[in-house]
Image (cartoon, rainbow, N blue to C red; front, side, top):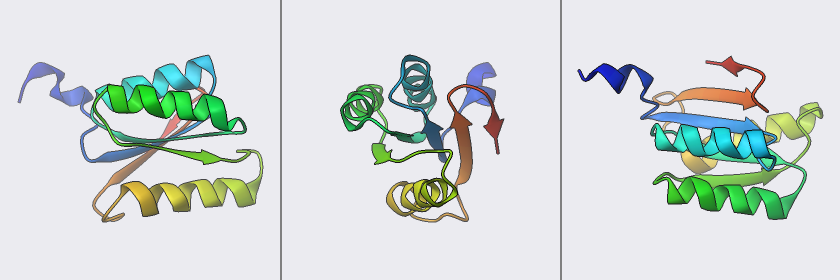
Length: 106
């Protein structure tokens, strides 16, 4: 195993809430560069689309979900759409959720 392999996110699916903002977009691009498939969520479709372009340019699969992470219904939908779209086998993929850079849950 190479030294940097410990940072690999290969076979992980990431959901970045607030992915249309500067911090969220940078995190999405970094996760994509580390090998994760990335969903970005937020309330502004145009900025989310720009972030998805950055994710794809980093060589990963990207997807956007418009919604408000403070809404339980929206948050549930974001997770469901992420797993449906980016994970062929939700049991096999490890899921990482990030809220605007404030924390990671695995």
